[in-house]
Image 1 (cartoon, rainbow, N blue to C red):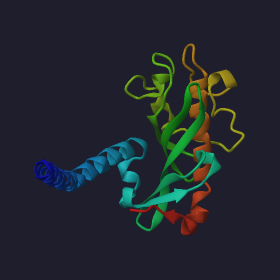
Image 2 (image 1 turned 30 degrees about the horizontal axis):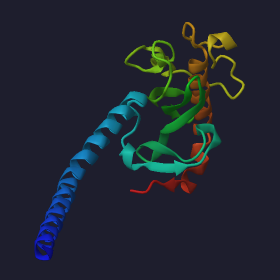
Image 3 (image 1 turned 180 degrees about the vertical axis):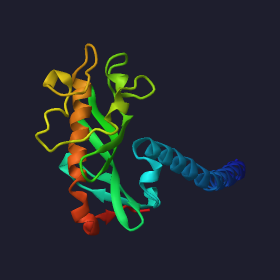
Length: 206
């Protein structure tokens, strides 16, 4: 009886070891492919918020981690666009903390003088049929940021129309677009401070 149990135990141990090894091998073989697909998706998203002729560097490799209240709580990644030796703008991860159903994650592209190049929502939990019109697949509302200029912190025009600004709100939903507009404005204003601190930025870990 004991020998039989011992034999079955050894068989199970060998089976578990082989299965673990196969899992590790498959993970190693697919990791490169997964990383490559993630990089392609990130590049495609970058192309939506900053024109490709705006920079000639590897934007994904020009990644820095910042802690800036203007972008939201915690760490945020900032990607610096360059043309030749000159920094021309930035793509920033930003958070709108005051969406109707919680935080809204954004990607904002700007130059360093207050011009928004593009904006996309990367994550949200807004109400379907109302607040989710911030998604480009459902509405062109988010496209209207491209080319808009932020004329300083007191720019009253960079707001939703209900607050006296130029951006439309959604029928039955003002909180969501207001949160996005304000977050983009804060990110654009923060970008104007970046040229003076480029040498002090902390690079992202690979």
